Length: 160
Image 1: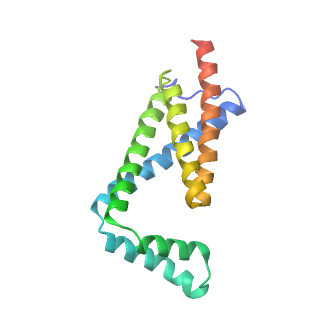
Image 2: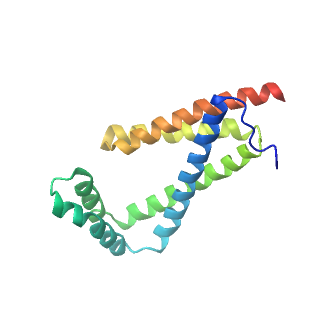
């Protein structure tokens, strides 16, 4: 257990911080994916409405509040099911790979790079079609994690 995380330099520190952030994000995706299974669309719409309504009263032109309100009102069963499966699988796959990386399993590093690379490309594709700054931010963060994962992988291969 003691050899899970060994920080050797600032780049190593940045790698482990990004892996921790990615793990927290992945856990959140799994929780939201599972939660969507149990939520009715009407309940989800009511929650979003309750969340954004005070903001819309204060500023009826608030872009984020209007966007969330619009998205929740146009949410369908098919959209809910896609989002539920996507978030659950995306989060679960990343958690499995992160756990393997914590255990220093060399196969997990290239697998993480491929997985994040595919999801980054998908996020950029979606961004080019529907916009959404969050898609661009997650894609850039995933690319950063890929670069750091590759660097860590190269370092570990030299040691082993």
